[in-house]
Length: 467
Image (cartoon, rainbow, N blue to C red; front, side, top):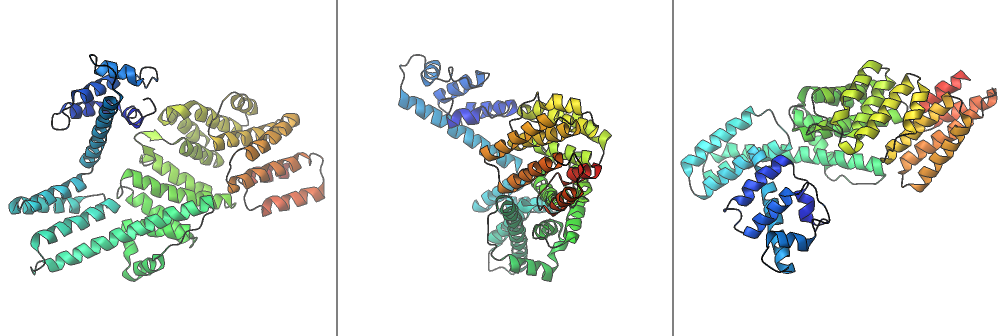
């Protein structure tokens, strides 16, 4: 039972959600099965999903103490509780989405011919829409539904429906345009990351329509329009507009969606950085810093360990040592527990590297286990640079071979394999230049500059200059 969907979903519930679910389960409107109530109580009393305690015969004996084990009855009881939890989660989502809840209530009034209740309710909902700070995709879809309910209530033969039909059409257009732009951004990002190819039907017509109607002036359209243009490499001006719009309109979208928009801008900066355009370090750092300060980059108070790592890396690259040290320390407790220690140690080691405290770096990175593949690779890259700085060439040679084996053994995307393989090759050639050779140095410099994918280009060039 410990591997069942019921156990999985139950033990993912927060203490607050379990408390709400308890009331849901005990309500006779939702549940009239004593066995389901008993099963909930049994699971709720468990501190964790222990496989031994979740043996189906043990659980059955606990909830039906006077009966012999009946597998069919046990399965039905589990199924009823699972369905109840799913109903609870759907109800919870609806309660948290006030706009959709209001639309459903208006539908209920209309279907029951409650004209007075519908009209007063519709006016109240329309006013809340006008005053809403949120103007995201869901807002426009619900607004379209709101006008549609009014149209359905009024009837097609009334002269009053003319402005309603225009409003329905406008809201549906905006919803469709934003959704298509958003989906195009997702597809372009995936296309770049995994070297896939997508077609984008109707996008040319939509872009032309946006230009004709000047729809990019609507903030929620403009943000996705500029994000799409940025991802299609249509010039830096769109990135600057996107960055300005994000700062100005970050409250226009729900936090989850705004976080995705931030990440689109961040990924654009990272793409440019990977091409050697180092001025984008400041751009990405400013976006990250802004997202931390306004809370957009947090999800329920939790910060992604990879975002934590990237912010620290940008801060160190800009020599924002004091700010970065404070961020690494203060952000530690916001990390998910499984990643908290390893990512804190890793980023502290990067901070020590920036301070040229190489022994602390070597000690930290040799005594921490990092399960995340790319962070583990990054840690090895930092250790390679550390051994080079310490002139520990025997350890360096061993680590380079180890890193090469790791890249061959693991399923690493072509982009990353090329990036780290280039780094390994260039470090080996750099070590062989301990004795000054003008010809070799020139060729190595040319190859580093010409390398299309190389995130450690700046450090390699700095070491070359020192020879």
